[in-house]
Image (cartoon, rainbow, N blue to C red; front, side):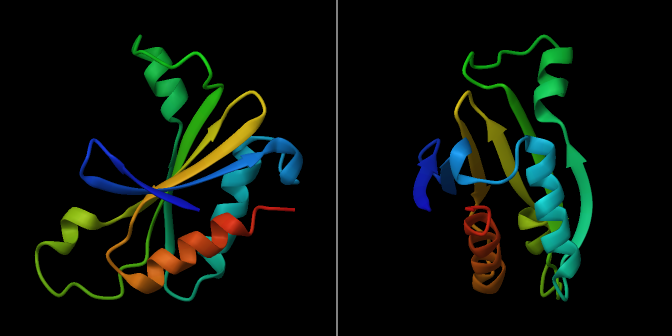
Length: 128
C-alpha cells in the first residue's frame, strides 16, 4: 500500500492491483468481498454502497477517460463517541476503481489505528 496526500492535506492509502493478481473480475465482486469482511468484523457495520461512476455520469460530471467504474463501500467501526468531532471522521469508505488492466483500492486514513490496519489487511487480502 502506498500513502499519499490528496489536495495536499488528506492522507489517502492506495493499493493498485493488476487484474491478473485478483480473483475478482469486477468492482461489484470486490465490493462483495469488502462487505463480507465488514460483516465478519466484531464491531464494523455495513451502511451502503455508492455507485460514484453512475452518479457522476448521470449528472453530466467529468470522468477521467481511463476510469471504467468507481464505487464506494460505506461502513463504520464506531465503538465509542468520545466527543462531537468523531462525527467528522465517520463513517469510513473504501473506494474501488476499475481501469482497463487494474483495480485501484483507496481510502482515507482512519483515526483509529485498529480500523486503519483492518482496512489495509482487507485490501491486501484481495491479492490472489
